[in-house]
Structure formats: C-alpha cells, structure tokens
Length: 105
Image (cartoon, rainbow, N blue to C red; front, side, top):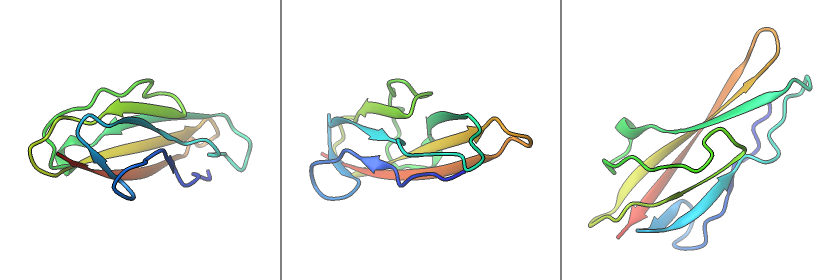
C-alpha cells in the first residue's frame, strides 16, 4: 500500500500549526494499493498522545478527506490524528500515518 503524503490544507502559522477555532481539512487523496485492491480509510484521534485533552469531532472519519474544528485553548497544545488505511487483499494489510497538529490560542 502506498500512502501519499497527506495533503494538509493549512494556511496559518506554518506546517501543522493552527489557531483556536481553525476549521479546515486533511486529505489522503492519492493513496493507492499497488495490487489494485480496494482500500478503506479510518481517521481517529490518539487522545493519549496529545496535550489537548479534548476530543475533536471529525467530519466523515471513514472518508479520504476529513475536517474538524480546532478546540479553543488558553495555551499551545497538540492533537494527534491517525490515518489508518486497510486494503481488501489476502492478507489484509494496514498502513498508518500520524499527523501532529499544534493548536495555538
């Protein structure tokens, strides 16, 4: 399975840095399976790894693209989002990619 570099639609503060109430998205377009098997996507938050102690609600966590609203924070913190991609081959293979997003007040 070939995970494309996740296209980040971030426009402020440099790579992976967003402000409170930021609302944009991430895309896994271009992710393919070299055998041509169908692939499925699952995005989830690794809450224990981040320093923002709030769950974010993701739109369409089973799609190629997600979006969410960054929480309102008083000090910088991090959110860890995991992209899990599974093919439908035999055996079924799974690949992961982690996004670490810093949220600034």
